[in-house]
Amino acid sequence: MNVTITHAPLPGLPPPTGPHELAWSYILDAVFADAYHAGIAQLQVILPTDRLTEDVEIRALLSRRPETPGGTAVADLGGGNPSFAGANRAYLLRFGTLAPRALRSLERSAPEGLTLASNLCCFTPATRLWGIPIRFASAASRPDLVDRAMAAMRRSFAAERDPHAYYQLSTWERA
Image (tube, rainbow, N blue to C red; front, side):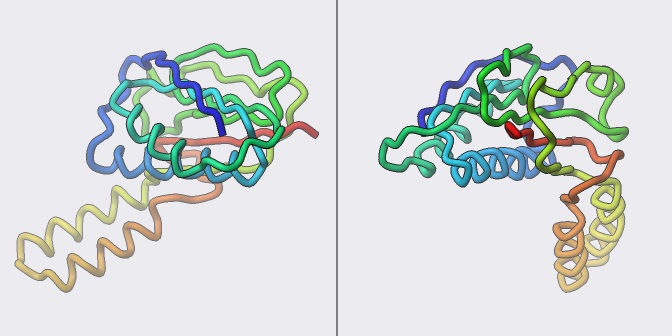
């Protein structure tokens, strides 16, 4: 897979640290896994920050396969306004109610000629709620409870559909 990276900042986007770093890991893994299995030969990735460039480059190296003719895809994960004309797949990042208003108000319209294939929602409200018992167990020096709460937090971190999740990745395919 040949990957092209461009940057288009999103004002108000938090740095990829803590739960946001984990969310970006889920998002990038989903994009690259889907593109790989769809036989995409050319992937254009638009990132909101250059701090994610290395993560994309690593996934691009891991997604290499012998050059075969394949489709093209565009992953608009930043503040870009790309053309999806001719793309076989598209990945759009939107934001749910946990995100700041500036991010929620971004206009992201469905790509013309493509149909919705899947959704991935990361950093759900349940994830934030699991932070409470994690902090209490940590303060009480109960590593066993911290481990249980962390495992539950990981299970609730991503969902197929959650309108309140901070990050919402939609995958679109040519019909």
